[in-house]
Image (tube, rainbow, N blue to C red; front, side, top):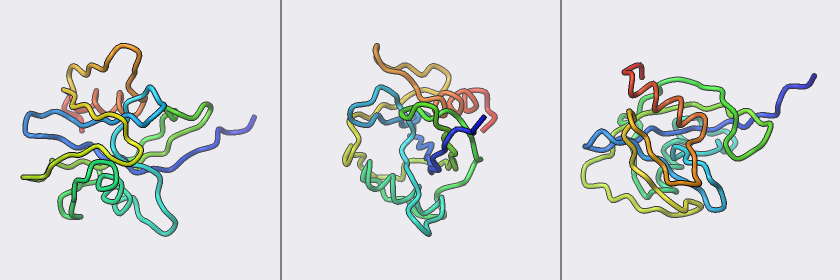
Length: 140
């Protein structure tokens, strides 16, 4: 038996002043995921997290504003039979930052961790579901 292939990513749990968390959906997918993405060669998880949030949402984060909260292995939302190895970071939306969906992102939603609701026909990615549940229970 061969292990599943894997993808390594950095994901960002971005919260707003109302305690909601940003999730995004890429074009031609049905799963809502955290902003983030694959690491570039020689890039750290933190560097990837900062770069991806800027590319996807136009939000500028600084290294001292973002904190590593853990590493998770879950099924990938958009790649069958593939594991997602995620370095998860958490930060608050900086003051006066405008959020603008861009790049490969089709949609942005702000969800309450205790009651995340996505539109009919869509779903939360396994990582998003797990982390939001941890947030709701105060364990993140």
